[in-house]
Length: 249
Image (cartoon, rainbow, N blue to C red; front, side, top):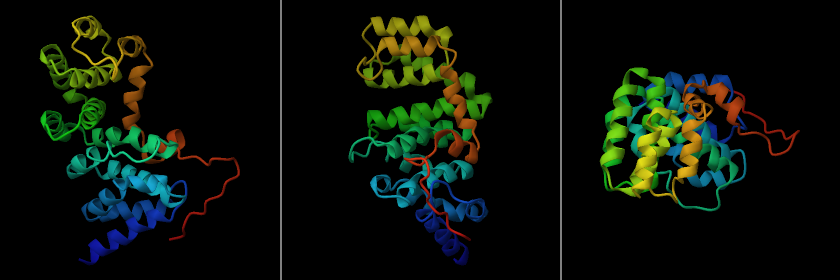
């Protein structure tokens, strides 16, 4: 019980840090292991905080990234169920958070594949939530290449057989992020058959993504370390010279 309380207190400190947590706080949270998972899930899914004033606005991003380090399977459903939360406009912090949810889920690797397919097949999940699950599958193949062949084969099978246009759009997006240019012909055939929702995934966008060697680089972002994520994606100060003090441990 003492460990649980300690983990919760460490996680609560994420509400008070600035653009990135210091290494000591991160180490303290990660050392708590499983005891930190539920407090981190609670904070990572508090999407409304992203619209608050800093420093608390950064807390869901910090918590989400730390979940990506711990990689607990039980984070999948609550994270996916949070991506479709309708609040205010899509601000920069919400974009960072939204972009990284499937990355963090994919970081679980092979162990998450069955869970994500179950989410895709669950009618309780919205099309947007299923899209997140499909992207998580794509990113899982980057973390664990041993599952790439089976995941790609299943994505292709479903695309060719499904008449769910919204689902098919998500499948095409996942295949595009994997750079599956060799499936270009089959994908375009499904577009011509009217089997893909072009409002969600236009054929021109799919064509560009599938044929661009840069697209697959996006999936590789799932491999970034915790600190590389802060360097690449931020959050960054809105103005040069902004100073948000980190806490001292």
